[in-house]
Image (cartoon, rainbow, N blue to C red; front, side, top):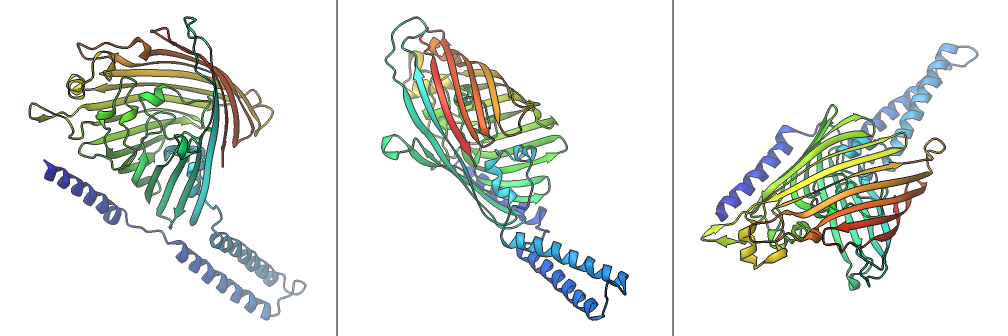
Length: 467
């Protein structure tokens, strides 16, 4: 079986290289070639200008030749400006919000694609204040204290080698201090081969293209002080794995499809599958997984779509009666988003199913309420409105409301018990103020209820930025 996996991996690698080298040969010139071409044209125009000037053309005596000289000078100015932009690696490529979205990138994360060549630096960060109520939903006392946390400081570092090859990465500094529970990690790091105008090959550590937050998680990209619970427990944002695949557009359609290392079921819990993320660190790859996404853009700012992830999560770690337990994990979600005339409407529903959970529980020694769910499901709908949209293009003031349901143990194997505390309802009411597009100050109050009657409401304030 080990040799089968090796052969499978080698075959995929060979296919990937073949696509890069044979099917999509680089046809556009490199930056150096482009500069050489422009400088040659500039030299010819300068020689032509000298020749025409030497012929004695004067505006008063030969208007036609003088006009030709003015035209040559105009072309020289245009070429000189273009050459200087290329030499200084100034941004030269427009990347619209729709284009960035089709590549699975927030605005700042797409910075390197706006460069014609060279290094790109961007980033974002956010700080979160949480104040918890003193009583649960039944009036029982709670001693959970307030917390002020610099959640994350992010640097995007990218490099554009030429017209075809782009490197992009996101480095995260989480919770400010590695000595107090924080960490430094790579959120993504991949190479893109821009094979054609609407088709790209991508390989490395990549964001899983599911939901409305996992790929688009900059604090200026969504309303709310905290990410939704559905997109934390069922779609475990921020979720990234090692792999490779393709992405592109076809008319109103955009798609992404990757083969990645699968999840690790040894870390699934009653809370959800979040702990099963391997995040590219010595990832177990006995069981690969497939993830694909498709979106349909109806008009600017309006799209809907869905995605599916499927693959075994056993990773060869669980043997029962002489056979390997696969623990097939399948996650599906549908989503829609509309940002039109100051309105921001979002909706998402996600469901995950796990096979072999009873066997997994026995092999892991889990009992009672501790079983991972055989089915997990959740969803939300959110509405926001920028009430300053008719008065300012830069300053925004957006009240918002989100309703969400989540049950990470919608079903469990026979002989186990669903924990009523896992069946939750969230209502969030808040407001976001942006004094400029890249700075967001958000405040909201969350009513949290569950079937165990232990829900604890909280008030949150978030300060976020991107550049």
